[in-house]
Image 1 (cartoon, rainbow, N blue to C red):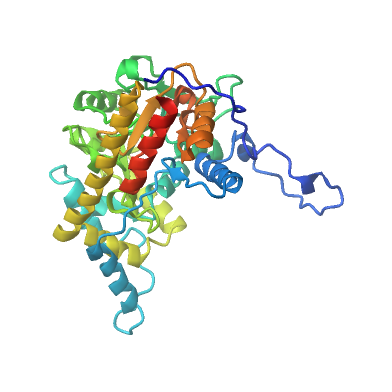
Image 2: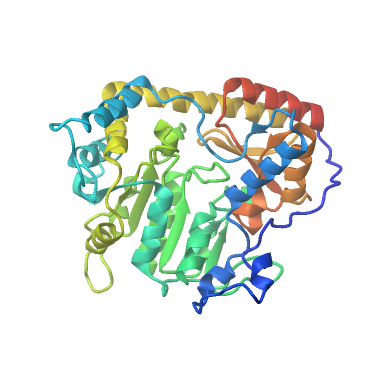
Length: 437
């Protein structure tokens, strides 16, 4: 039974902080331009979390060249694409070599067929039309485009813990103040703490009013899927405060307990919410790159102007449209045969999550998630998450993700992903038992 880890490694120190100097910058003889660095980039605390972890993995591999490293860290899919999806992309790519099949620029908003298929597959009976769906090269890219849409003068709220792209993009766009010493929080961001004592949902009665509310369900990293009652509270808050919810549903297909898969299942949400989603974890498109954003026509600014019109302008100005080849794959994945195939991949990863969940529970550790999401949020009371990360990596050659990378509330946690080959998941479980029993 797990009691404690004897943490013997140095605490987390970023490999290259954005504030750190580079050797050549200190050389007065090196030519420099007269262009000042964007001051908002100076505010970023560390390297972006996941490239940092990849760098640490590379360093570990160099230190232990014969070790088999198993990654339960970066949430990257591992199983091959279904044949019906891959064949569709291959056939489309080949058709581009013919006069009759070649196509150049497409609609910036995405193909009408795919937009319609997304609306009918994921938003059936919710009143969402294909014209309100904007196809993109991924949800993370759309988060930054939405930041550009809203501008630097907006106040924002985020869950804590939460996927770091929301906060980092807010810093870059200029919405935040400086970092508070000690807490690691940025000024001008409302951090909505989500912990197990409150069922991973913020106390909205204590949440200050903000213009934008970023909300992810199922949550990355905790794996919690918000209930009907919780999302009804969130929509009510947005309505009362005149706020806009940016709702990330990238893991919605993993929900099995009847919780809402879309914010638009909640009455009134179309007047206060934008939804961002992705094919990455649905169809294994992490490398193919395809996502979408829904902007309802009912969503209006304070002056009555439709938000969809401005987002369309952002898309037309800053984006030439998703790859036609990727869109062909996306459309195939939403066909009857394709959707059945991609959902079998979802079931595969969910089975991996069950194995990992049983492993941590057998060790006496409290693990959250792993039911409605491909992530587990594992608690190591009284610890520092980077110390836990280092200890596990050093002694088992397993990559995890330190919870503090998702916000101050993650200090005592690590995130573990269920994306992986089954044999690696089983081996990782054995290694963890050997370390922690």
